[in-house]
Length: 192
Image (tube, rainbow, N blue to C red; front, side, top):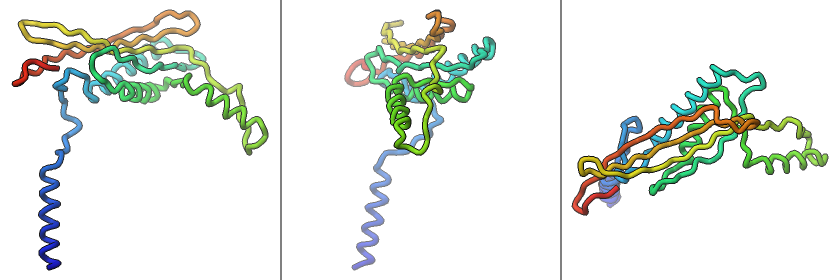
């Protein structure tokens, strides 16, 4: 009886594994049927743009160092795009290029922790004078344009990024990365 139960369990496990989702190679380049940017495209664009900013600062070194405030990427498309994935890859690549990101959104939390440490209730005292202010900030947005070409619907999504000097508000560098995709044809007509 135990042997039959064991065999049935093994058959069930094999059947469940065979009909479950199949793991795909994450180095394979896919195009989304929806027309939205894939995680690979987002990461590739983030790394390319961060490397270009790294080149800009190698050509234009800053004596005080480079501290960038990166504001969350704005998604102005019809698709749900994981902008956080782009932002995380972008910041990670900036750090590898020795460009540091100042998290302006967490400044209040930092000030609260510093105030608590100065109350004398902690073993180590933090100094408020060590907070960094950004000397540049980065704005990024993803835009979309849909059009037809030779009767085929095309969607073009562009990642636009701008590096602005804080003191002068001058945009010192700007770039974009675009992806064009053809709509998917199926039994239900044309869709994204």
